[in-house]
Structure formats: C-alpha cells, structure tokens
Image (tube, rainbow, N blue to C red; front, side):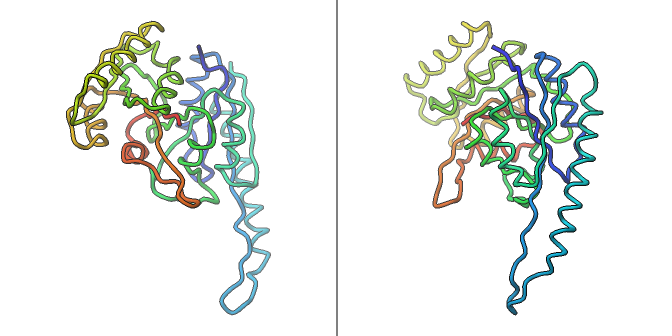
Length: 273
C-alpha cells in the first residue's frame, strides 16, 4: 500500500512554500504524482439596508485580484515543488473547500494546513477542515504550522473502536510502516476487557503489515487533553485519528477530540472520517 497521488490544497492568502515543500517531500518519498490546488470565491453583490445594490465594479476588482493571486501561486507551486516530480495545478474561482473536495477524487491523500485550527475563517477564501474531512472521502494530513517536512518517526494512533478510527489506521499504513515507534492509545476512565481486546486486535493488525506497535491505556476522564498530552510526552511527530462529526441543520458539529486536533497546529495530524 502506498500513496500514488497526493493533493495539496493551498490557502490563497497564506505563505505557501513550507506546505508545498512538505507535500513535495512526501510525493518524492512515495514516488507519487503531486497535484496543487487553490481557489477563492468572489463575494457576491448585496443589497444595503437602504435597498441599494453595492457597486458591481467591486466584483470585477475581486475577480482580477483572485486571478492574479492564483497565477502567482501556480508559479510558486511549480518552482517550489522542484524537479523530478510529476506535478499538476488546478485552480478556480469557487469555494476553496468545494474545489478540494472535488479534486480529492484524484488523490490517495489530501495535504493542507490549518492556520486557524477549528475557528471559522472566511469561507470565500479559506478551506473548511470539517467540510473537507466529512465530504472529501480521503484521508487528510493537516500539516503543522510552517513545517517543511513530515518525518513520522514517532506516531500516536488515537484509538476508538469506530468506523472513523479504523479507516484512519488503514489510511495511515504507508506512513506507519516506515515509523520507528507506533503507539496505539485510548483514553478512558473505565478500562474494560473489550477495550483491551480492541487495542490488542489493532496492534496485531498492524503487525501483519510489518508495523511494530504497542498499546497504551490512558486512564483519563477527558480524552481530548489526554491524547495531546500523551503525544507531547512521547514526542510524537504525527497523530493518526478518526474525525468525528455530525450535522445539525447545515452546521457540522465535531467532538472534543476532533476539535482539539484541529487546533493542535504544532503537530502533524492524519485524520479520516
């Protein structure tokens, strides 16, 4: 199992080079195609409280600015990715989340940053992590802020016996098989035989794929801080976790661990839903 096609989604307003270098490094490691993408959506005209439509010239100015920024970003992507890679660029005047979700069909892995964590950003110009994870149907690597490489030597798997966590473990196998240390940990106040068996089954599964992993039970009331604190204690450079969320009306509501991992911008996080 390997990543043969990697999509990197770039924020039109954020520094792009560190994320491009990280994605390119991964693409070289796995001999994968690298697809870069970015988008921004024009804010439509609106009617003021006095009933007047805002000047449509503002819309045209937005379009010109976005197209110029995307052109510069494409050049930065090509130059920074460097030689020896099969690269492709996609951009559009649309929602960044919509474009990344659409292009996820091309990739085994989506790489993006999370400068604002779980906080809401400008949906017209920045990707929505929740939308990407819930609708992209691909594992998403949330890169640590300003990081240019992903070593993945020490990996923490945040385990719950759920569909999302099972998917994340399988999706992360290309990275887990190359890691020096893998810990599968669950946080709970009630350590049952079923939970211990669940951990044992996962570590056995990983061993069948050549991954030497050990299990840890974190006896904690609150699983979100327990996971991030344990990651710090073992000096993990990657956390693998399921992303848990549900829809309430048109809003995605995420659990504590998922929100906490969105905000943990000092660590690489590979998440699946």
